[in-house]
Length: 89
Image 1 (tube, rainbow, N blue to C red):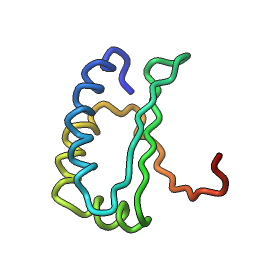
Image 2 (image 1 turned 90 degrees about the horizontal axis):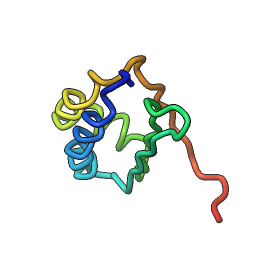
Image 3 (image 1 turned 45 degrees about the vertical axis):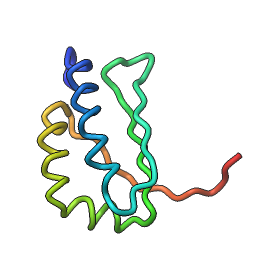
Image 4 (image 1 turned 30 degrees about the vertical axis):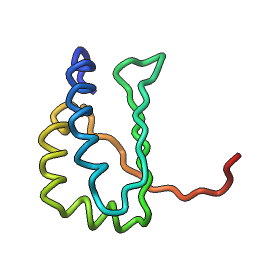
C-alpha cells in the first residue's frame, strides 16, 4: 500500500466490496488492517468454489471495475493465494 493512501483506499474499498459481493459464488469477505504496519492489509474472501474467483470473477467486466478502483493503491502488488478449511472452532 502506498503510504498516506490508507483513507482513500478504504473509501474505494467501500465501493469495491459491492462489486465483488454481487458475484456468483461469493460467500463473504473481511478486510483487516495491520495494527503494527498501518499500510498493510489482509483481505480474506470466501467463494463457493475456486473457479468462482479465478474464472468467474477474474474474467468478468466487474473485475475490471474492481481493478480500476483498487489496483493503483498496491505497492507492491499483493500476493493472492487460495486456501481451504482444515479446522474451525
